[in-house]
Image (cartoon, rainbow, N blue to C red; front, side, top):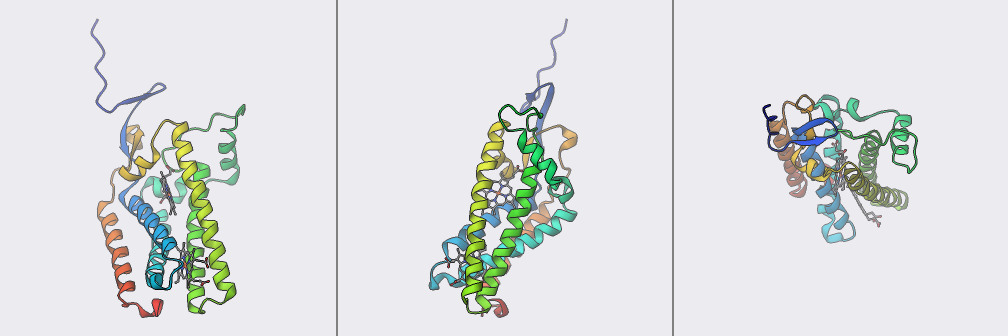
Length: 231
Ligand code: HEM
Ligand code: HEM
């Protein structure tokens, strides 16, 4: 009797199915994510001092531009970037979370290649709060930061920080439960999947164009080329 063929390199076996590394997150989604992280961290670090105010505005506006872009990409992007792939009803999200409770009679929370049903709501929440932080910052700036606008901006940016903390804990926890490194997947775009589950194109050109456009916006704001926003 002949021996079975050895498995191809990089093949992992989960249950009965052989999974190989497939592209799940396109480049625009990854560029969006990591530029957003940098903008948020930068805006946070430059928030308190007069001296770094222009940097604060620049990073905040870039975060806002990234969120606007992501709304468009959520409508026309690749499979797992689409809202239609990851926005599910709150009831589905709750049932998903209940699957993690000890002793739950529901199916154990299953692995998703894109965002899971609870993660989908977190993504919407992160984007909405980010947009609200930017809008309130703009309001505070235009009105010379009188109490209400400044207060709203402070509350919204702190709420955003809390949600980001939860997001990071959830990402690490979910990855641990399913034995995969989700952070690495958000960097490389790849996850173990069936070949037909991978996306066909990374949309590299669009990803690089997004990077260039946001970098240009930051430079233009910082050098006073868009005085309507920073003057
Ligand atoms: C400023 C802080 C952060 C913000 C605002 C943020 C926001 C987001 C958003 C909006 C998404 C959805 C991506 C998309 O579909 O376009 C996402 C996904 C993700 N983020 Fe973050 N993130 C932050 C920090 C981090 C950090 C520090 C890590 C790493 C520890 C991380 C890891 C991930 C991962 C792995 C995903 C994909 C989750 C999945 O597999 O469903 N994020 N994040
Ligand atoms: C990622 C987006 C942003 C984050 C996370 C953020 C965060 C913060 C934080 C934490 C503070 C300090 C609040 C305090 O303790 O009083 C602050 C202050 C401020 N930010 Fe932002 N900000 C963002 C975007 C913006 C934008 C886009 C603008 C203007 C266009 C802006 C304008 C201001 C102004 C004027 C203050 C001073 C407010 C005051 O003195 O009460 N921010 N921001």
